[in-house]
Image (cartoon, rainbow, N blue to C red; front, top):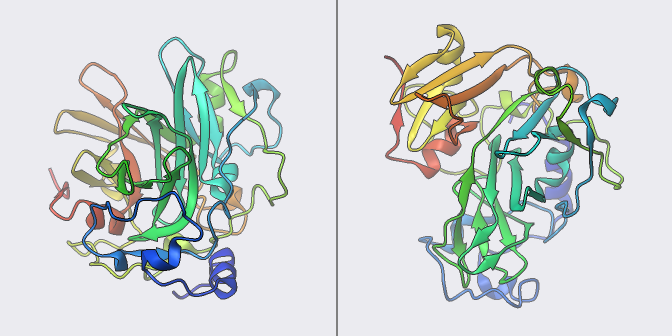
Length: 323
């Protein structure tokens, strides 16, 4: 990369080399059944540097009304989750960039709000499965530069971008994705003056508001990624909107003022800072906010991720380059 990623560089330099071999993982993962997997090779999984729980997930988030929030800047990104009958909740990226997973419950629905900075992938999952309600943590492992989560109940490993268990007892189990979107704090607050809730700062010592991956979304190559680059001359760290197995370049949506294709309407609105640009999140360049709805105006599950990650996990996906 042309520019140093402060946190990534530090954790890699500090980490003891870890072989991609279950024999070397057993001490840290005594309950994981490594005889079960749905990946081709153990070499696909790499250590990202931090050990298990070295990036601590949040399990008991606290909230207050949007009108009480004073720390967030207007253009800072938040992940918004809206469940019918409940107040919308905002999960600031200034916290998720340091914790990556928030285990929460909204109106009786247990959810995992997740953000992988290295793929810019922000997805919310329903934590209920036929095996019970799961609680997720950060394994410290990466596959295609994407976070590998784990559940504390079985210690199975899960691919964050797709929500599928890839190693362990629950291999092949798929989590249900919940519609949500990323927007600026101002956009959330304007829409939710009276009823919106925003997550409070966790009671941990982190420089919240800082970006430990400075310059990452203008890098020439993603961190710890050895796969194919995306087609059509698209930059590996260009943002794309993934809906199912389709990807729309955000640059095209922005230039067009929105698109209506393949049964969805994708809109773009200025005002959201990139969390992966400058050292201070609020100073990041404006990448805008995406909202995806169906013909009835209902929010649709989607992800605004980097192009390389879409190509890695949907190698036969459809690139929506032009009308």
